[in-house]
Amino acid sequence: MYSIIPKVGAPVSPPTPAPTTSAPVSPPTPAPTTSNGTNVDPWLISSAEVKFQSPHISVSYDINSGPQDFDVYMYERDCSTNLNDGDVVSVVDSSLLLDPADSISYDILVDGNKLSTSSVVFFDTNSSGTIEFCSKMVTKTSGDLEVASKKVKVTASFDMSNVTFSVSQVSIVDSNPEAISLDVTFSISACACDQNFVCNTSPVTYTGGSTAPELRICLTPSSSALAIKNFNLELSNSGGTEDSVEYGVAGPDPNDVTFILDDGNEKIVVTRIIEKFFDGSNSLSVSGSCLLESHSAKTAFQAEIVPYELDILIDGNAEANDLREKTSGCLQLQKLLANFF
Image (cartoon, rainbow, N blue to C red; front, side):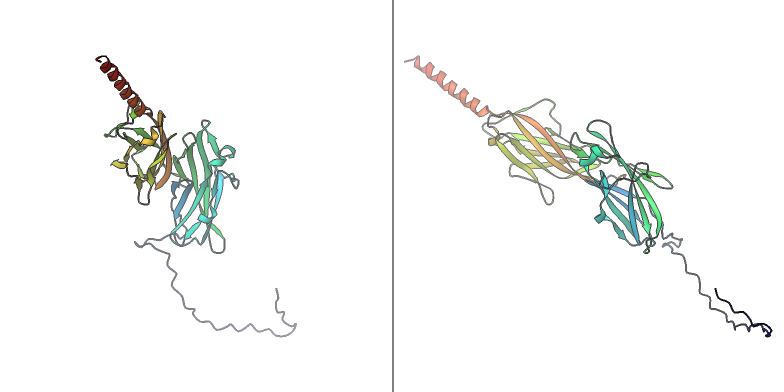
């Protein structure tokens, strides 16, 4: 710091004060307000909205005008221990999206191939259990200053025995903890049934011969909150395969001998067991998958493709048996007639 030292013996006059003027006073900048006139915190983050669409868990927040950038961090279920990169759950970098003054969203990839090696996976049985982890979203200024954050603690159940994956519960963790439950388990049941959507209680053997027997397959979601938006159905045995229903652009697409009936969220596929399947086999495999969607009022939108499979009994030798019976009848008639000559 520099200062001026007066010369010794020289009279020192007090400095003449600079003239002063009254500076113009600007009115204070008003705080941002909502449409009803109340003050808005530009850095306020709303509660998270979580949805599951295999293989991703999507997280989104409503925001105000403050955030200009954000980061996402992954933790174990204690929300403090860092989760290793490439674990069973990881942030999809390309999914990070900030819509200024509107929303922030990102996707978390769930990699089912890493269940056995992850510290956030807890097995209940050899094939089922839960994935429990935490993610934190931090909002930032354009100068990279971290301002506010929200944490999401996720518990996702899995079951490898029927090749399905479902989110059973999502809880939001912040300064005022709240809980959101997604109690929809995505699964489908399939059975041979009658025209009243009632599954056959005892095995039915389908027999060929003079016609292709009619087969009804009922597809029923595990919850009334689920809807079958699209599906396919394939018949197969050693005689070949037939795509009775294929995934279509606007919904399921049946072949020429198949039609589909609806009863609420259930479907009946009415098809024919065609000639090539009666090749001596005694069973027929029915398999496929359904695109299930949830629009329950208490859950976020979710969608998942779920497989199904069942076997039915057929008499693959029915036509041959019928021919043998006719041939035997003819021989008996010939013998009877021969007795008269």
